[in-house]
Amino acid sequence: MKEDQVFERMKGTVSSWDKRGFGFVTPTNDTRGDLFVHYSDIADGNCLVVGKEVEFVRQFKPKKGKWGAVEVTGGATDKGKEASLHPPKPVKPKVVAPPPQMVVPGKVAGVVVSWEKEKGYGFVKSFLGGDPLFIHFSDVMDGNCLKPGDQVMFVKELNLRKAKHFARTLTGGCFEVVPGFRGGGG
Image (cartoon, rainbow, N blue to C red; front, side, top):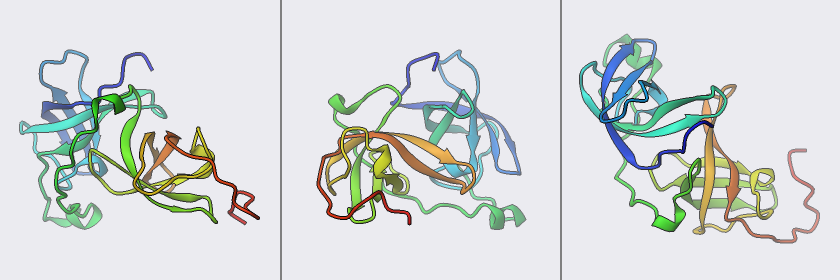
């Protein structure tokens, strides 16, 4: 990563949008260039309108080695044939920002939603909103389990094969002895 992760919300203008479900946003007051946007990162719709102002979080995409816009608000809904390919996401209430001590470059702050200790996996949710993200015990850096309600930090990544985001390199875990547990998965 060449620059620090930006965790706060930013504003910008949609500079292009392709009907296949992606485009670019030009950040306001930021000269580092346009940011890629995928329809799955639009919180309140399934497409963007060129020239419209939007808000987003600037996030580094490690697999691509580039920066992109995520948690985008200001989206629109394409009611044409493209809408069946990219159904709109339900609008979710705004989530309170994490405490200042939980802002770490490159990581997302969130909370543990659930944990299946016998199976070694669970789900965490970002304070920025969005769907709960899968987390496996092998990605808990400081333990082997999680407790629902605990605050954690993690990296949000996209599983290209499943086209879903998941949590990696999570901190905020705990240790627990689970008799007979060997990592799950069969």
